[in-house]
Length: 167
Image (tube, rainbow, N blue to C red; front, side, top):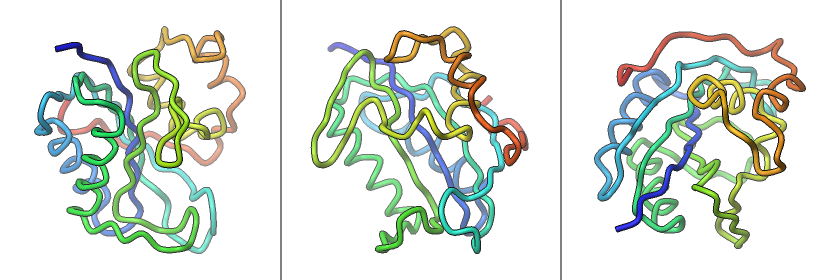
């Protein structure tokens, strides 16, 4: 069965975010036909949306999977739900766990449920910096090196916390 390398972004700002991210990494590693190859460090970042919420803890993991993109998305949504995720109407509001497929091999997909590569990656230092940590030589979908994307980020609100338990 064909396996793809996939990068997944993780975020949390409710409850014990460190424990939630570590538990989510373990749950991703336990998915059928999927294994975590490399997790980034954990980073604290200011919230993107409403500022009257706690800072987020973010990370990125590289996984190898033979699941189809939508099958993986649904599995990740199940993990979010198992970790207490409640989907509210508020965009960019607080959440126990957020899991986003960032890049899935060389695939491009645009559907109502899923867009690959992730549409907002270029604006999110809390995605690009952990991604750069685990894939410094990556070339982005627009043909530019990931380093060029990172160099355009405002890193003022981002700080490295620690490595994940998986490293």
